[in-house]
Image (cartoon, rainbow, N blue to C red; front, side, top):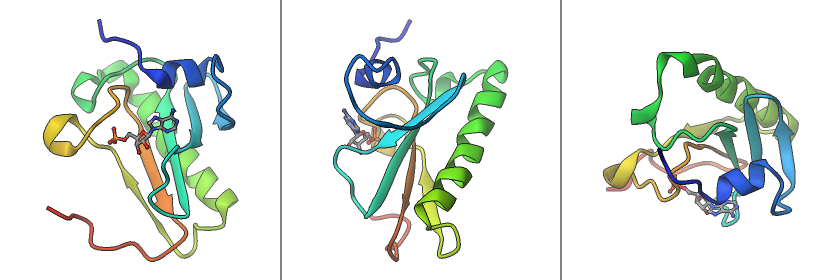
Length: 116
Ligand code: AMP
C-alpha cells in the first residue's frame, strides 16, 4: 500500500489549492512551482504511486487524464499553438511526488524534449 502524498489532500480539498477540474476519476490543479506559463497537473483521484503501479482496471482513468488535458489546453488557449504532456516515473524519470500526475505544459515555445 502506497503512502498518501499532498496530492490526496488537494484532491479531497483538505488544503485549499484551487481545482481547475474534478470528476469521479481525476482532478487538475496548477503546479505550485510552474516551469512555464501554463503548468497544470492532472492526477487520478485514486492513489496510484507510479506508472509501474497502473493496472488494467485503471485504463479509463488514465485515458480520462488525456481527455481532461485536451479540455484544459483549450480552456487555457494553448491548444492550437501546442503543449507537452509528461508523466515522470521513479528516480531516473525525475519523479518527486509518488502519486501519478501528468504535467500539462505550454503557453510558450518549449525547449528540447530532454535535457540529460
Ligand atoms: P514530478 O517531478 O513529476 O514528481 O513533479 C512533481 C510536481 O509537483 C513538481 O512540478 C512540483 O512543483 C509539484 N508540486 C509539489 N507540491 C505541490 C503542491 N502542493 N501543489 C501543486 N504542485 C505541487
